[in-house]
Amino acid sequence: MNFDDLGLAPKLTARLTEMGLTDPTPIQAEAIPKALQGRDVLGLAQTGTGKTLAFGLPLVQALTSQGKAPAPGRATALILAPTRELARQIAEALESLTKGSHLKVALVVGGNSLNRQSERMKRGADLLIATPGRLMDLIERRAVSLSETRYLVLDEADQMLDMGFIHVLRKLVPMLPDDRHTMLFSATLPREMESLAASYLNSPARVQVSAPGLPADRIAQGVHFVEKVDKPALLAELLSGHIGDRALVFSRTKHGAERLMKWLVKGGFDAASIHGNKSQGQRDRALNAFRSGSVTVLVATDVAARGIDIPGVAHVYNLDLPEVADTYVHRIGRTARAGAEGKATAFCAPDEMGSLEDIEKRLGIDLPTEGGTRWPSSRPAPRGRGKAPRTEAKTGGQRRRRPNRNRSRKAA
Image 1: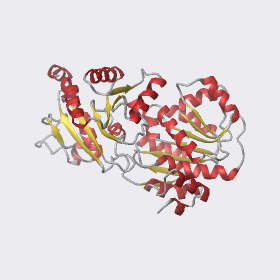
Image 2: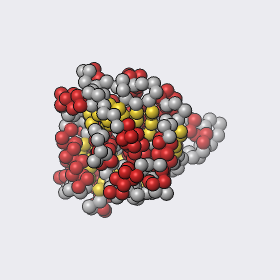
Image 3: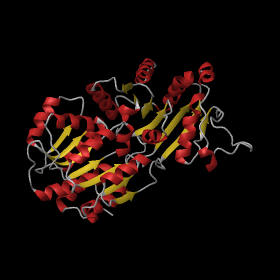
Image 4: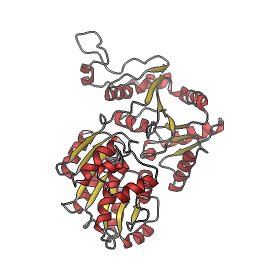
């Protein structure tokens, strides 16, 4: 199958050919025909599978055929994304698609001048890409109105829920017309997401190209059982084994990410960091350096790394395990993008066994041990019986026991 088979206009497929794109990804092949029919779409697919074009192509085709310019302060189509970086990537992709057309693309995100964005919206926008918080700022300024917005896309919607945007979404969506066309894309489908989809979508076509929330088969995963204080040294050892490959390292805290980055630089690695204490300019420069290859190790926190789409990330290191299993899925989805293969390595300290067990339960597999010896389970055995195998379904219902943090701290 190629893009010509999906019902797209010849001018649009010609533009895709100019961009070097001829064959749709599975999510694109499934979602585009349904979106072109005017159906609401619930798309479930891992990150890096081409979701931007899955909603972008139907939007561009619909808006091109209308031929009506948006009024000042109005947007015909709204795409909401959880982070500035992801919103910027979507805007760049849509600008490439609309090159040479009359369609106007606008981007409003935090970290940039609110006054300049207000001035920009005076010209209106066919396609408005925004982060929820900054869009609400502009609405409160009366610089933007959603009363004529006929198309709504929520991209990486599960991440927006994780980042606490649900309250903003509940304010924004009622501002749009009831007869809008809505598409919601997500890598995972937590319970809150099901409720959101039921509220915002009208008899949606459900498009699912893989089990929601499970990593791509092309990602080789493994775990090292290591004391917390020994993690940096182990990371440096592993990084030394693939000098020149892009590696993304996740740290739980902003200060930890910055401290680790400086330690790596002192050790001779080309490293940079992105986290909430960095300005937008600093984050952009770090990402551009990582993308160009002048920086090969990028240390990031979850919030700053959401939406990173950089081809060629060969390794993802979870220096600190996330407390939410779905976050692990998002993290390792930064590798093995666009058909490539990747490696995801987790470091587990004794007090992180609960998090590891949650991740393994979510994935339905035990992560292969690549170093050290597995720490004792954080979960109690069922009463009246010997310790049940951890992989049995019954163990998933056991109440989680808090690890002995004092003992773990002394061991570290």
